[in-house]
Each structure stands twice: as structure tokens, then as C-alpha cells.
Length: 624
Image (cartoon, rainbow, N blue to C red; front, side):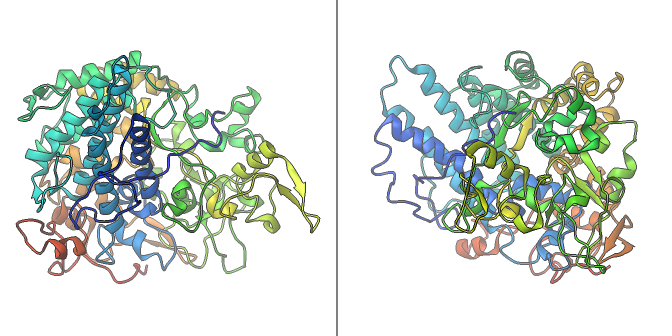
């Protein structure tokens, strides 16, 4: 294992002023008038830029990784009968006007901070340190491209600017014609400016390889969704031209350049596939794996979790033991997605609960984002990744219960993101030593006996709650297997797809569009990528019969447990296909932002949302 308590960067400073509907808060006393005053200050700006992802982590149901996961056919919103928000997301509806207000806010904070670095970097003398200058600038371009990518995939046409600060007003512009060329230019600049080996892999910084991966991800979404390119391996899209000048971007981007960047990342980036697919996920950690029969063969060979920052991770959100229920970042230093994806808490009609010895090593949580039964049914048992990804809780656990509050729970859970409990924990020590991370904390710092005669760790759990606050696995946003599969999808060359399959113990297969689609579904299941894959395979204005709409509609009639009884899923207001047709997969722009703009020429609501759309809103969770 590596980097047990990885330091995540804190959001310390904000540096440019934007209009109210972008970001109006003054976060600290430091501002663009007095900061940065040195290269050291610039490094603090960069730390603050990465820290925005921790800000986003405070609200898992407003993060791109978790929202896109729940919106896909991989997962149900699930949770409890009172978890209206997760159900609204899963049904492509809304339950309140400000459902994504924090996501909007944080994305523009990120854009603001990235732009501040881009326009500040050459205020200092970099003589003899040109590589460091280029790395910093490349990272800033990467992060600006990332935040804009998240923004347009969430909302489509949004306000956008590429100056040091937002103009007044800053109007909504075309994602297809204006924003996406800038996104692609940002990732291309990042790729051009950064060098392989310039930073330590897994330290939380963007790398040249990560820039190549996100360049491809953005390019494939742009060509697939906006340009309706269809099968990218056989498509011959026109070059994307840039009608602006930007360092490292050149004047255009071609498909061949994207492929070359992927090949560079695969062969020269320093990354490699982890030996066994299961070693990517924290249930193979060396504390609990010896008590988990599913990984007994790995334990016998002395193989354990590859850890945070492993050789396959290319970009991630990092966390650390600094969470608190108070303060600006609060729980952003905790991977709360683990908590959200835990086995549903509460009890069944007999008083039994999940998360104790009977469900080891998988822990209790909110039971949201459960795996949809169709994913389990569609996936062949011959693929070892199926049971390495999905916990079939009723079959695999000694005892699993459907609680009296559960909803949209088929008993299938996402092993990739679930909390892992400590085999030696007890319910009496639930808040202090529940997760396996607590066992590591005790081991690292040793223990003492307190005044009550109780053994306590010398390293405190800072928010005082191991169950809710002690989850530090990286949120992996890009890994090498994804990059390899993107290369196959762009080229039609099955070489790298078969390397991914070989790692899973599967035989080689030939390229076809159907095969690469399936390979992405199985290899990347439960990682938040499926929804936008479906969208780009369907194209803009895909309608109710497109691939995305049909896949999402299959949730209708899938089996679920509701408060302890079996039933089937049904849409809360109409159908999944209709809601996809109406929205094209875009989210509602927070109504408060539209009211602030007070001008449809500046900002207007997306299609399929608003008070005039009868099936856009739910007032409570679906009752099955």
C-alpha cells in the first residue's frame, strides 16, 4: 500500500472577482490586488485550485462523479424513503430549485482560480526554471479545461470567459461552437507544456498523461455528442480549429493528435495496469483482506491493495484526516461517496442491521447509488470483474437485510466505492474505530489509555466519527485502463483493449463498436463514466429512441426492494426515455442564477426544466 493518509490540498485562496451568477464570495483577505506576490504565492494558488475538488466533495450529490453515476443505467438513486435528492437525480428530475447550486458555484470558483494562475504566471522571473513554469501553467490549463468540461456536460451552454476575470455581463454561450474548442485547447496546452516525469505520479497534481487522457475524453464527447460522429474508429472528423491564440494549443486539433497523445501516455507516461483488477479497490487492503474469502487467493500470494496513487491512477481527488463538521471545507477532506454507497443503515422488521460482523468487510452507510439489477443480469459470470465490482449482498454476506427504510435497493452494491469496516471493531467503538482506515490510524500512531481506562489512538479521528468521516480512498477520475480503451475506440485497434481484458483473465477479442462499448461498460462499471458514454454514443437531440434513452428506460420494471418488500422500479413522473428526450441529459441551471441575471439573453433555463415542464419535478420519493 502507498500513501495511507495522502495530503489533499486545501482551498486557501480565491483570486479573481466574478459577477454574482458566477462567484461573488470573498473567501479570504488575499485578493488579486495583493496576491500573488511571489512564485511561492503562486504555488499556494495552485494548491487552492486543486482544493476546489475538495470543496465539491462536501456535497457528493452535486459532484460530477457521483451525479453522473446515479443518472446512468448502472445505478439507482436508492437510499432511504426520505432521500428525495438522490431519487430526483436518478429519475432525471429535480426536487428543489437549488439542486445543483453548489456544483455551479464550485465550478466557477475553479475556473476563476485557474484563470488567475494563467494570467499571473509570467509576472515572475522564471529564468533557468522554464520547465517549472511550463508545468505550473500546464496544470492551470488542465484544471480550467476540467472545470469547463464538467460545466458543459452538466448544463450545456453556460456563461464562459477566458480573460483574467469575467466580463460584466458574462453571457451564456454555445458549448458546441465556443466553449468546447477552448476546452480542447486547454487540454492540448496542458499536454504540450507539461513533461512526463515532471511531477511524482499520484501526488494529486495533473500530469502530461492525465492531460492526454482528458483531451481524449473531451474530444470524444465533443465529436460524439455535438457532432454526431457515431463510431469514432471509422469516422473522419474535421479538425477542430481554434480562432484564438493560446500557448501550446496551436491553431487546431486533429483526431490523429489525440491518438498520438494517448499513445504517449500509455507508452511513456510511466503508468501501468495493476496486476489484478481487484487490487484497484480498497477491499483488498491488508487489514481486512485476510478475513475476506473472495480475495483469499491474493492473500495467499501476499498481494494487497495497490493503494492511493498506484501505478494505474492517472488523476484523482485526494483526501486526508482533516475533516470537520465546521469550517469552509468541512467534510470535503473525506471521500463521502464511500459513506453514501455503504449498506443501507437502519434495521429490518426483526431489528437486524447491516454493517456488523455479518457483512464484513463491507460497511454501513446511506445505501445510495445501489447497482441496478440490469447491470448484474446483463453481465456474464464468466467475467471475473462482475463479482469484483458488484456486491451481491444477500448471497455474499453472512446476513444482509433490506431495512424498513430502504428504497430502490436490489441488494447489489458498488464494491469499488463502498466503505470497508475493520474486522476487529465492535458496535461499542462504532464512532472511533469502525473503518479499516481507523485500524491503520491506530497502528501508525500507537495507543494510550485514557482516564476512563479505554484504549484510544494517539492519532485522533479529527471529526470524531469513524463511520461517517474516516474514508480516505482516492476518488479516481482517470485510470490507465480507461485511456487504453479510448485508444481502441478511436483507432479500431484491439491491442490495448485486449491488454485490459488479459489483466481480467479474459481471452482476446476483435474490435467492433459493440465490443468496445461492452468493454467500457464492464471495465469501468460504477465509476461515473457510463452516463456520458451513452450520451456521446447517442448524439445531440437523440430523442426517446436513442441508445441513451433506451438504456435508461430499461430501469423501468427492474426489480427492487422497497421497505422490505420486493417490487419493481417505475419512473416518478413519466418515463426515463421521455425525460432524456426532453433534457438531452442536461441538468437544470440553478434558478437563483437565472433570477440574478434577469435577462434571457444572458442566462436562460435548459430545455426540459422549469415550472412549465410537468414531469421535471418531484415533491417526494417514489412509492413502489
